Image 1 (spheres, rainbow, N blue to C red):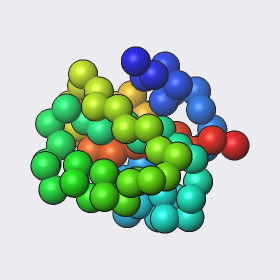
Image 2: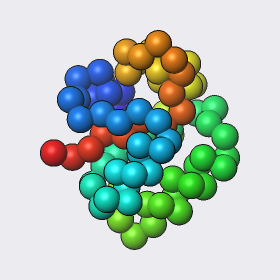
Image 3: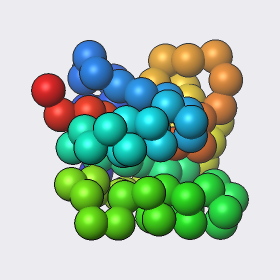
Length: 84
């Protein structure tokens, strides 16, 4: 799993709205979803990334832990690493 990448990558996007915006701008990215994320969020990400250069990975950690890995003080359901 790419969780060490989440700690070290500079171009990291946290949150659904920002991730959807990056996907809409055709930025190739890897999207990490918490394992306890709501199904409607998964559907939004999958619909937005259809036919685009986006890899979707469901992590083994929950939202709270994903936020901690990203070194933010709140939980995170969606995190994207944008290719530079």
